[in-house]
Amino acid sequence: MEKIKIDRNKMLLKVYQSLYTHRDLLPDVAHALALDPTGFEPQTLEEATALHLEQNCGRVASYLLGTQNVLDEDELDLIKVIQVHYKDQEFWRDLLYDFVEYLILKEKCAIIEEEKVLLEESKETMLEIFQMEHVEKEIIKTFAEKIKKAGFRVNAEKLIANYLKMRKQDAKQAWSVLTTNPAFFSPIIVKDEMGVVRLSKEAAMDENKKLAKFLKGLKV
Image 1 (cartoon, helix red, strand yellow):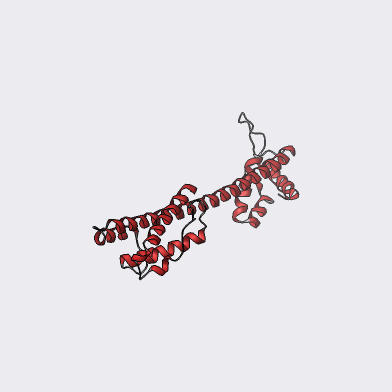
Image 2: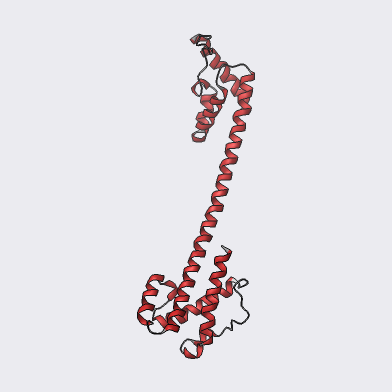
């Protein structure tokens, strides 16, 4: 970005210096070339000064190309006009080409700056998402451990994760379901790892009620 900015300033100073040196040939717009560019350097050119030089170069270029404001024109259109009207005037043709090159570099700088801003915004958004995900994982871990410690036969991580998912859509409804029918988020486990039934339907319903009461006291 810095290199492009310096190249942009270098081209702008080159154009303005040429116009300033030959301002006697442009009596109608010489007033736009009153600022002596001596001492200006591309690396240290302030934005306000660069804008001032650009506007003055633009006034002269607009005069030379017969357009109201060259800064509002498309670069390709300007090149076509230069090719037609300054085909046999090498000095003015090359000077105007340099100004168009400056405009292109300026536009490139603007695009890069915009991309930089978007990138920074994206980074901030991704950081927020990461932080939210981290917090959510910690919540799931904390409350799942409490549920496991209490001995309930349920996939605790799945239960809390599904609860949090619904909570993002409707916090009140999610809390109501959690404290009345937590098995909605993760069914009560009635079979062991071998597939043998360990809890009857009635026992599972009772387990669900006890879990609901337990979770209500936890204030998830």
